[in-house]
Image 1 (tube, one colour):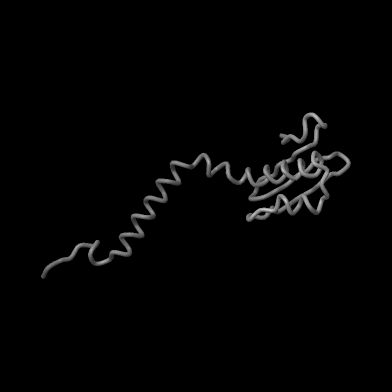
Image 2 (image 1 turned 90 degrees about the horizontal axis):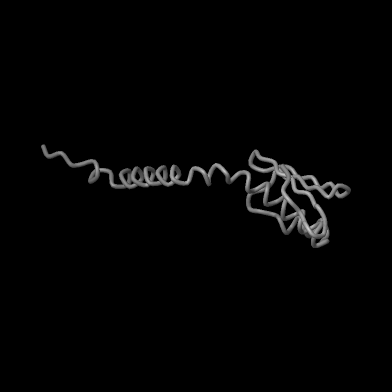
Length: 109
């Protein structure tokens, strides 16, 4: 009885296994960037909305459309009196505040 190798018997399973190992290796190499990604969603939304609304003086409706992303935000507040914007998404929350005409908007800790 001749035994055939696993590669010849299951070429699709072998290919999937190789791709999985490559994906895990890439994920390990990019772990710092992947860990930072959730914070980028909320920070981008807060900062860009603040700049659109308070630096460029656009309407709230226009700015909401301007910062809309493929990945939705879970929470959003716009404090027009304090000119502070808070956005939440993917488990992270970020705030941006208008500091003045010369400074514009800045992400706040």
